[in-house]
Image (tube, rainbow, N blue to C red; front, side):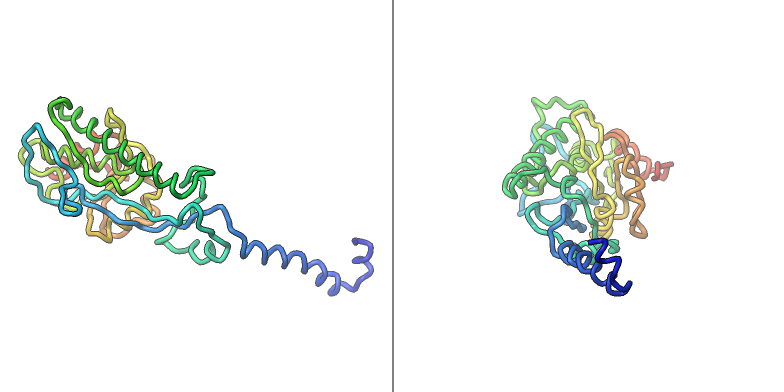
Length: 265
C-alpha cells in the first residue's frame, strides 16, 4: 500500500489516506461512548414536608418548630443504558449547567437500570439510618428512646446524609440557645455522613450549587475535600462553608447566626 501511494500525486495520496480517517470519525460520531451527561437536579427541604408528610418525624423527645430551610441537593444524570454519542458530548462539554462524567464514576459496571435504581434507594435508606445515629449521638440522645422517621426514600444515593442529620439537630435542639440552626436562612448542602458524624465527599457539587441557588439558598455546606469543585461554577450570592463533620457544620451555622468568623473555601 505504501509503495502504491508513493507513486500517486500528493493530492491523490492525501485523499486516499483521508478516506479511512473520515470513516473512523463517522463511526466515533455515532458510536455510544462510556460517559453520562449530568445537570442540576431537584432540591428538597428536610425541615418541610413531602406528599403531606413531614420529611423528619421524631418521637420520644420534644421537638421545636423551625423557620428557614435545610435543602438537600441532587444531580440528574442520563441512565446507565442510555447511549451518549460524540454529538452529545460536544453539545454539552462547554455548558456550565451540564457536566460530562465517566459512566463508571456514576454507575456500577454491569448492573441493569433496575438493579442500579434499587441499589441507590438502598443507599439512601442506609444514609437516613446513619444520619439519625449521627444526630442523636451528637445530641447525646438515647436511640432506644428517641425514634426518627425520615420520609424521603424515593431519592437515591447517600449524599443527603449531612442535611438529614442537621435537620434532626434543628428539630431537637436548634442552635442550642433557643434559636433556629438555620438562622431563618435557606441553607443547602451535600455530603455523606457516618455514624460518628464524619462527612464524606459525594461528587457533582458544581451542579448542586447551581440547584441550590436556583431554589433560593444563600449558604451551601460542602465537604471540605470538594471546595475547589464547588468554587468552579459557584453562582453569585451563594456562600460556601467547608465541613468535615457534623460538629463542624453545626458550629459554623451557630457562628454564622452570631455574626462570628466562619470558615470559607
